[in-house]
Image (cartoon, each protein chain N blue to C red):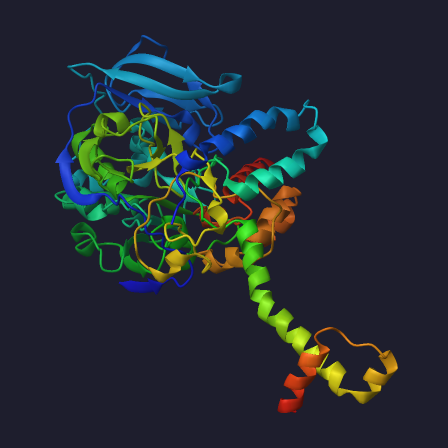
Length: 448
Length: 115
């Protein structure tokens, strides 16, 4: 087991961290899938409104790579397909039936599963829809089934302000997790790496075999797999690493063992807006309003994922495929009188210019308010201080704004962990994350 | 310390009433920067995060630059005192200019005791 200590980053203490207890949630009436969360996937719908669909049946496929299909996390009827601007399919809602039909795949005993060849395993993962749980680094894309990664990373850590506890998620799933690790090992010619936070290593990770274990300490983004890969297997041009969440790794094992697309999921609901921040035992694609019906949609923002990197969703929208938590935080849409010149005992800032600096570690209430107007960029050097990977975010942002992709590549666009810290910290309130994300898509289109 | 928004609601309403006149197509469209400066001086505006980073640091450019000014104050005061005392203690410069700054008498007395 190797240890890494990340020095740069930023820990933000927020109210509403989810409690470690797990509560069984009632069976939801509907689940949902959001096609827009998959980078560079152009969805081709395979279902229509009102059509019956089985759990694990494909809902849509990528137009460029038809073998990449996203499957239904529940059996029932397609209640609604929501389209956005320019007829972009934004969300598919599935109303669950009492007796859910399930797509059955071949079930293997653990020994049989471990004897599968790589080609057979890839076929099973593609057929079942589990392939989409994998992402490739750089750029967080669904990997090409014909490619072979240098390494596979399993992320069992989260240290964003409202952290998800992988320890409770993997409780009782040790065998599936181990089977998943053994199977993922077939996908790479290198090693399988499992990353956890120092002092919070889940039991399933501590007892894992046939893998390299790493522990990370330090401020956020030390718990993000994208940042961890940067330290363990830094990006080299023409090489790639694949990664997935520890719950998905256990799901790979369960899929092979049962022959069914696994839908059970531990999901955290956190944030000041949540009535009871805690973990729930529920299923994929569940809505935040189902888990926490007391959270007011009028006063709060619902986020699928963390507060730095999540996607804003409506309260009835489903949890993202790559997310394991909802963050519910108050909307900051009311003006504050001379707020910028007050001492700021209740303001949260990394800059030591607010009185709250005298209370380190105190959890604060944060809203979605920008805290100032959008202004021209000022080179303060703060971005480099908080960036968890070895890049210069300010220069990268500027090169992307002028579409200088060659310069952006030199400045490490492939290394960016997309952790959202540079956007959070920016006193000019510039959307660094959006600029970098758009730049990555432009870069990928140029690359072909 | 936080001033409740309820207490300042009337003032905010006034700004809301005036906004159309300074916005695009309004009578005072060209004076919008002036309106925005006044508005954002008095209020932290109700603008919320649009992208994937939903919470923001409380620091903005106005406060950042205010701290720069505050941090510069000791340097400015030192600079005034230092250059004044040097000017006053130098006989050549005093005779050449033939004039003195209002602070020079006190500066001379401070410098005289120290140097």
